[in-house]
Amino acid sequence: MTDPETLVGIGDSEETELRRRRWARDRELRAPRSPQTLSTADFLTLGNAVCGFLAIYSITTNMLIPHINGTGDGTGGMVRHGAATAVTLLLLGAMCDLFDGLVARKLRSSALGAELDNLADLISFGIAPAYFVAVWGIVGGSGSNQGLSAFIALTVLLSVVLRLARFSAVKMRPGVFQGMPCPMGAMTVIAIVLLDPPFLAGLLAIFGVAYLMVSKVEYPKPQGLLATATLAWIVVSIGCLAAWAAGLPGGDVLMHIGAVAQIALAAMAPLLVIRRKVGQKVGDVRARRAESRGC
Image 1 (tube, rainbow, N blue to C red):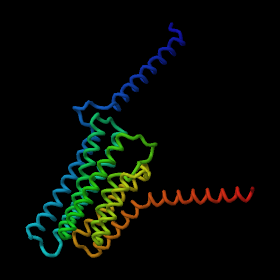
Image 2 (image 1 turned 180 degrees about the vertical axis):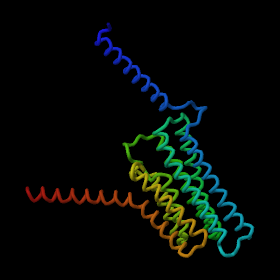
Image 3 (image 1 turned 90 degrees about the vertical axis):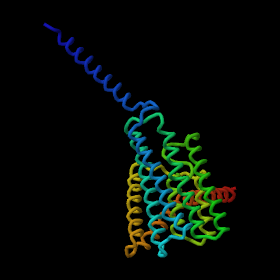
Image 4 (image 1 turned 90 degrees about the horizontal axis):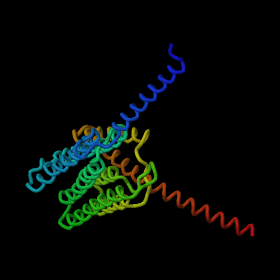
């Protein structure tokens, strides 16, 4: 007869072996793929790049070329449709950018993931919004305005380039970004253009967004409830843009409310930082006064 303790030992060894195999399989699944293999997250990243390119194409064919050729419909419908299409594509790109990080953390990522993400972000949140600003100056401004809009557009592009380079080179504490994230910066720049403010005021506001992207102001990463809220905001924004592009009653109001809300959200973080710093200084002054009175 077999000793019961021996049976227990066999059972324990089999369980340990199963755990070891399970651990090895999980490690293999989560290990980075080779550079020749694309992961699911990489395809989402490529979708972001495609959306950025199509946004540029829509701006060119529906806004810039009709303006140059003088073939617009005279009612602004083509420009409105082109702008709404471009912004919707960039919102879809932002959605891909939101999900590719989540998928990469849940599933196996590739060795190309980080590089692909930066390149796709440069297209969708750097080149596309900068091009949108430049075309805004060409379509809606005079010759001098065109030069200024081109300069501010270049500022936006360079800010995104620096922002992405710093993100790759500088390690931040978990849960925060240093500087306004590129997708938020791009959407804020486009929101300013959609509001069509006085030209110089609009350029100054866009320059402020470019500064915030390279600043040291900390923005929270979209995780958990914040990621869900970000996704909901993207879906609502797409709905508002669709109503505006279709010329539905109240479409202009919805578009303006969405654009103002986007700008307010972008300004919230620096305002909170300023409030915190002012509160700290006030607290320090009060503490010094209390110490002097005690003496």
